[in-house]
Length: 505
Image (cartoon, rainbow, N blue to C red; front, side, top):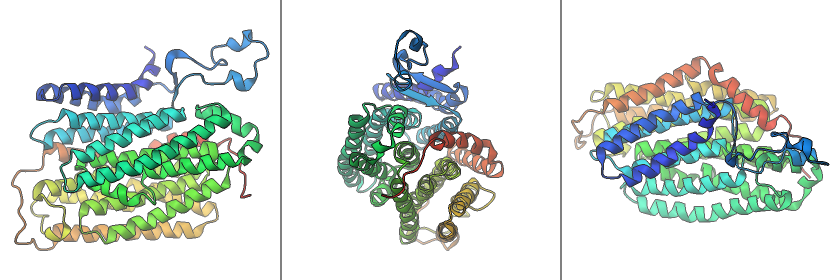
């Protein structure tokens, strides 16, 4: 069997499942059965797939199918032209889609066990968002990337709308309005690239632009770069979109917030790597990314410290953690990008761990207001332990996985001659750690308020099992980072190995 067939299936299977679940909404047993089977398949497919490329329609580059030998006067550039949408699957993509599959599977499982009546529509949204994120990681076509970016944006609005959380409609409307601005900016930036290069395949665009460095001095290239960076900021939730993104996370159910945050992480690295491949040759582009990422780190922790709702605390901390990923991209070296991808892989698990962990508090108390909580440790000791361990993981406490990725980022900053950046990242990690200690005390250790009502129902075992799974992954990767660092390094090398540098003009 040709195992490369699994490459498109990583998008097609959850996409088809989403549509089918929407059609069978109301048939609870069938909905559960289909959802569980496909959810289990999500992390399995990337492990089964063979490394390589998938050309939709079978239209391979001329150089690949040996037609170049019978076509006279064919240039090397034309022979390598990609006539079809291309998906690229390597070691780095395998790690990211596997972890994304774990998160998607966990979101589906917890959604099923924590609701009295299974919603085919809600599961449709979860699977559709998972499919869109997989496509963002795999695609080598910038217009195909835009299509799934827009699909994911609309699905995120749907996840917020069905949460039935106070003011969710207002948040969804704001996010749609901002998307109506950022989306066209991203599309126009892609259109400029199409006009200059005649291509939408990312590899072909890079080949055309970098074969003649004078192309990169065209003012339209700078305009295209600015527009695509603007779309990247919206998708990932970096400033100036940090406030609305945090609001979106807080208005989703815990299992939905897992995937909402995962989209931010995936789009941050997927679109960020496209920017590096095409525009990384311009030092200005890297400097802008680095500056915005530093601002995101500072704003994230500062805004989290003044929140009284633990969902918003996690939301702002999640935005701040995206800044670390941006630093890896902005420093622009193979080592820093490897560290940034490592941080992204860790954030997929850690932030999901936190959303589910604090979701257990919401499940037991029906409130996320920190001022109304307290004394929960005797009521839910094991869940409380898992929550504080998740906080330690996000803070970068050894031996958890984020310690390794943040240590690599500090090393990358020092190697690039920016020790101040390394010191800043260390300080912000310490502040994050202190913030979690404060939240843990207020929620679990201080005396319980007299008016706090606690639901007698136990937290579902499946939810606890998901948290234990996340804990095991955090510890395993933290203790043995070589499990994934080398694979992510191969992806970083592919992105940056042949990228020269044009300094400020």
